[in-house]
Image: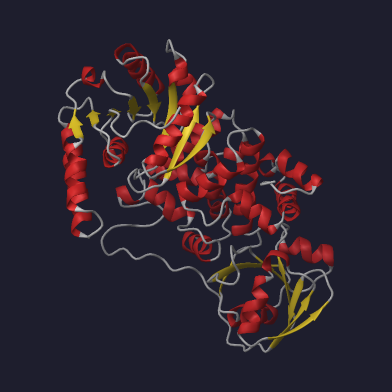
Length: 505
């Protein structure tokens, strides 16, 4: 079954920001669109708002005036649900309430012809459960857009237990014709993005709760070292803590309390206080007029480093050597276990152990651990942690070396796997479990995380690049340090390491 014809009539139920955005996408693709909302006048107001947004794009030279006129001409405010009867696709974008959605789809099933495809934009509810009350549950699928729908590229096409595969492919092809990047997903809690992304928020929240670093520093590290568009705290402030916390709770409950998805007490406190983020004026950061954003913590050294010793392969941190050479630092290379020595300091890429534990295990004095960076050749900042017995002189020497490479240096308390490394390892672990459970293909999982939440690299591909044995080692050390199931490695990850294969193999 191919994509819907460009002239096929589309209906959207729910004229909030998501529903209006979906209606705009469909109309811009050439479809006549009927928008319905149970609030009097809401659909017409949404169309007026779309018009103003399109006007801004015309004024900015990003949209031809005739396309603006044609798009608005295709948008119609429906006065009653009966006006949707001739639709070929109805997309529901109403409140996230199972009973409300099921009642609506029962009404639509009785109203629309049998060939009409029914789709829900739900972000967290089971497509199987929504469809269970229908006479023909196979005609209902998930069509999950991301906010704002006209801007965000990703669309998750979600199949429930009864969903017709031909209809899933039709929606996939239709979304592609609409200029989107669709992925197939099976209906499980959180689908792809809202499941795989949980560790991105959870690990920063945990380090904050443990006092390992402050919000501004942790956010700066995820941006400037991890390559993420935003840090976890500024992103949750943007999403809204009421929304983000509710999704986490929903996924946690749906997985019967699996500790991998445990909500944060810090975020719960923000929600209880009504500190939802940008929309309330206060979240992790203040958004009142004139409020200043705190600066990340940064160590500085006045020393000038001329040379250092490189012992063995630095693994995922080997890109640091290129920067050191380019800055004029003389590198003395010899065999070893992957260490950098400068003065009294010993630097190594973290393997997930505490710095003090690794210093004791390997007999290393003045040990400084480096966090992972997405690309050491271009990173602007790096996190370090130190063993408890480090001397001030050795710490200063380590900072001086990293500064010479052009890196800002932020110190975190001695925490297993620091920040970027533990976040990437946990994202890859969750993505591995989603792949193991056949939620989606490896290609679609990575595409979903890049297109849906703007990750610099898909977590499966990222893990393949830095080495699955390394990722497994980090997770095992995290689990040993915390003694929690939260960090248990995925069976698929263990299997692929044993087989010597990548996750994309």
